[in-house]
Image (cartoon, rainbow, N blue to C red):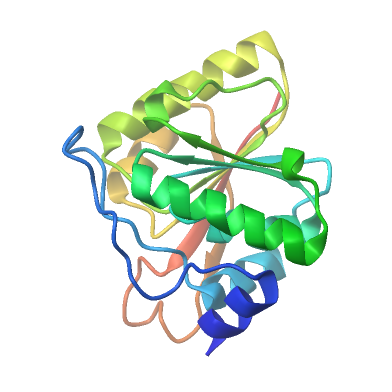
Length: 204
């Protein structure tokens, strides 16, 4: 029910057909699946995004998270998607969303490229991952983020949904990121301990 409600509210299409799985370019990327709107509701009951934040969603698919954050928090959002079909769907959704909300396209950007090749600009400070790829790719992206922080110091937060043990081990043992919050999804977590968000912060 929430899937239909929010897609209609935002004037986008992110539910239903999940076509556009991993490309043959890389076996390190996992199939596309959008974060359930019910999970996003729970996350943002406990986690606040400011309008000055610049959020990047790696493996953004059709852009669900991007439009949700932009609509409710007015933050600049960027989606990174390697699959051409999903990227085109995100671009079409942006057109529909902008027509409905009269928002500026400039604050909603999408890039079609491998996540590890995406350039981390100095202003990006919030990064979202719904377990989109293997630990090898994740390591490279986090290292890119850390290199960016060396050039432009700022507080960074990583939001992990359905976090893999490999991601957690790497962040807690090989980086300076610290776990700041865990958001458990009611009624789901007791059956599946992966049904949670972990927020890691890098102070400076």
